[in-house]
Figure 1 (spheres, rainbow, N blue to C red):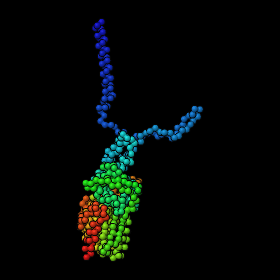
Figure 2: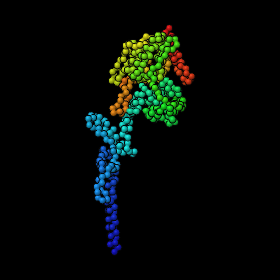
Figure 3: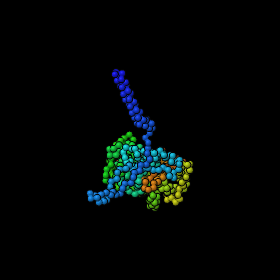
Length: 443
């Protein structure tokens, strides 16, 4: 009996072990093996959903047909998918394959859905241009592109300052004369590191600019870093009329022209000012380019041609090695009168072309502070379908003597600095020096 019972127990135990092993092997094959063999999460192709019916036909309690429209369609994930094939060359298809793969992954797997495809597209363009490592090459949304062009002509609402949005912080190139920014004491090279108490570190310059602009009569508090000093300044926004030319006759028969930008109407207004002033028989002329943030290249050539009668005024060098030579346009109105040019840290780009040509050609004398140092040429291109625009550096320019002034600037023949006390008390030692130098030239 004991032997028979022992055999029964042994057989039962073996059967249980076999069942457990069989279940374990099945579990391992069905779960563990796929987990171990999966090298990556598969990415599916475009997701498509069946069309939602426009109407539903049902029956009422009496069996009569009832048409119900519209209905709420069950949610289906709409995942934008762009086929990178088509007419795109094969080499570009291969180059951009990771981009489109990432595009699909983000639309399918990113935790917060749906993602903003427009923002992704704009971010991709912005990142592409930033990868060039040129702070003057950038992408602008339609709103940003429109506002950037407003600063050359017309009116807008803000504080009235030309700024550079391409650095780590928005930097003041120059406040417009008589603007809220000028009255508040902003200076060239001031960095805006905060707005209304919020730190702007890491915030893209275009977004910072949006915060600075605003309706007339509203206040904005800017945190300014000037050298080692950090302070707040509150500015009341106003309707800004972008200035172009101001002029007057000073004492000692000296004509004065302040040129504030290089827009489409600048040359016309400059010539009108020169005609009016020259009719009064001045002995000399002061051309004030302080705070002039630049503008159009063709306007720069037209402006400098009013003061230089002939010969080279600028060279333009392209990436392929080609060099274009720009010569003065004949017919300038002020090519012989003794000339002094006022410049400062806000004199940039097109205004540096004018000042550099006058200095190199010996046509006049520069007085003031070292200029901004923007020796490159940008093309502003409107993208199709109102998609914004891009500003692309297409060339570098050199003065007639072959100087490249990027990040260096032009050094005046007579250096005169403006102190904060000068601004606060309304003194202008740079203009005073320009008058002194001009009188010496006249003699």
